[in-house]
Length: 561
View: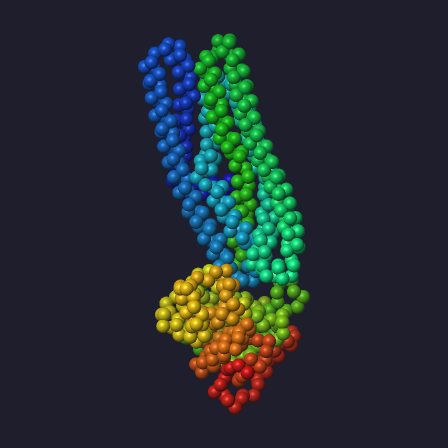
C-alpha cells in the first residue's frame, strides 16, 4: 500500500483528478438505490407513468455517467502506474546487465529470476483496476452517511458489518506476508531445479540423475503446495466470510427495517433502498479484502527488488586514455573469493611493455581464469592495482577499457541474437568487409555459408547449440572486433581441432607482428613460443615469474608448439 500512495503522491495532479473521478462515480452510484426508493414510494403508490419514465430516464443517465467516470479513472490510474512500472523494470534489468560481477555471482540464480518475475507481481498489484478498488474504499462511508439520513438504526447495523469487514481485510493482508515470503524462496529453489533439467540435460541423463532430481522436485512441490494451500485457504476464508457477511447484513437490514416499517417509522421503499446502500457500502471493503494476497505478493517482490537494487553496479564515468599503447602493470595484486581460507594469489607484481607476450600457466583451480577476468575488468582485485599505461582500472570507465582489449573467455557465451548482432556488440559501426575478414581469419567461412541466413542466422540458448570449436572460433572473431591493443586469450586452443588450433596460431602471430600485447592463459606451458614473460600460478601464494630466453626465430613471437 505504501508503494501505491507513493505513486499517487509522485503525480499529485493526476491523483487529484483520480479522486474527483472516484467521487463523481460513487456519487452517481447513489442513483440506483434512490431510484428504487422513489419507484416504490411514488410510482407504485400513485401509478403515474410519467413519474416512472422520468425516474428511469434519470437513473439510466446516471448509470451511463458513472460508467464514463470509472473509465476515465482507469485511464488516469494507468498514467499513474505506467511510468513507475517501466522505470522499475528497466532499473531491475540494468542491475542484471551492469552489476559488478563478483556481487551478482553471490546472488542465487533463482533469486535473480524471482526478482524479475516479481516485477509482474508489482505491476499486477498496482494495476488501474486495483488502484480504483482501493480508492473506492473511503466512499463506503459515503453510502453509510446517506443510509444514516434514511435511518440511523440501519446505518448502525451496516457500520458494524463494515468495521468487521475492514478488520478482516487488514488481518488478512498481514497474515499473508510470511507465507508469501516463504513462497518466493520456494519458487526460487524450484526455478533452480527447472534450470538444471533444461540446461544440463546431458548431465542428468548420462549420470542417471533423474531420480535424484525427481525426488527433489517432489519435495519442492509438496512444500510449494503446502504454502499455496495456506494462502488459498486464507483467501478462500476471506472471500467466503465476505459473502457470508453480505448475506447476514442483508438479513439484518431487512429484519430490522421490517420492524421499522411495521411501526410506521419508514417506508418499504426506504427499507429496500437502505439494503442496497448497505450492500454498496460493503462491496469495496470486500474487494479490498480479496486483494490481500496480491498486495502481500507485491510487498514481498518490492522488498526483493529493493535489496537487488543495492547490488553495486559498475561505474559509468571515470578516466580514459586518449591513446593507449598496450602497456600493463600488475602492482601487488591479490585476489581471494569471499569465504575462502586463502587467496588464489597475492603480492603479484609484473610490468608488461607494449608488444609483450605473457604466458600464464597453472593447473586447475589455480586462478588462471580468475586472472583473465581481473585483466578484462570483469572482477576487481582484493588488493593491489592493475594499471593500463599508468591508469588504475578501478578509476577507468569499464566500457572504455573493454574496447582496448580483445578478450576470449574460456567458456564463451553469446546473446540470443543473430551472428552479426553478436559480433557488433563491441563495434556497432564495423563495416561488413571487416566482419567478413574476421570470419575468414578464424576459419568460419564454411560454417557461415552452410547456415540458412549467414550473418543473420540467430543464435539460440546463448550459443550452446553450437559445437565447442565453432563457439570458440566465433568468440575469437568477436574478440578481434575491438581491435584493442591487448589480447587476453583464456585457453584459446581448448576444444579446437587441428584447423582451429592453426587459426588461433595465425591470429596470435598476426597480433604479435602488429605489436599487440598478448596474454595467453593455458595449463599447457608449450602453447606459445617466444613468450617474453611466463607466470606460473602453481606456485603459491606468490606466483613465480620467469623470463625465458628468446628463441632464434624471434620473428615468430606467437604460435602453436
